[in-house]
Image (tube, rainbow, N blue to C red; front, side):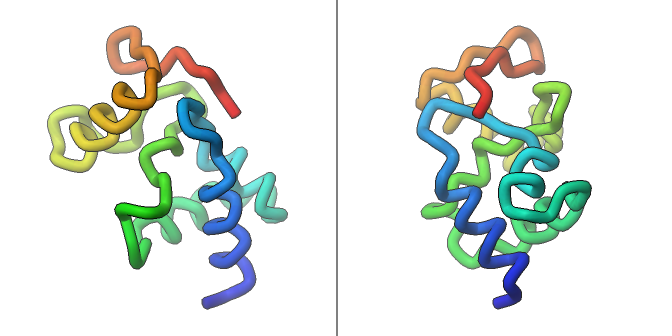
Length: 97
């Protein structure tokens, strides 16, 4: 596992339950500012999608990167709602990390 992947996974696991953050913020906190797409790649390749809280990462505008009617988008929305995250239409209202 690369240093970048390790740092991104550690950052993802630090996102508190009931909070969301953006791909760019994860990259910045992991020490790779400007590398939001790297975060996307790491999330796509997650070895254990049940343990790493991928669902807490959304676009900077508060929307999911996945379509709401896709299986992944529906799963993300379900998990976030279970943590108390409030939606207004397709946008997440927070709280933001």
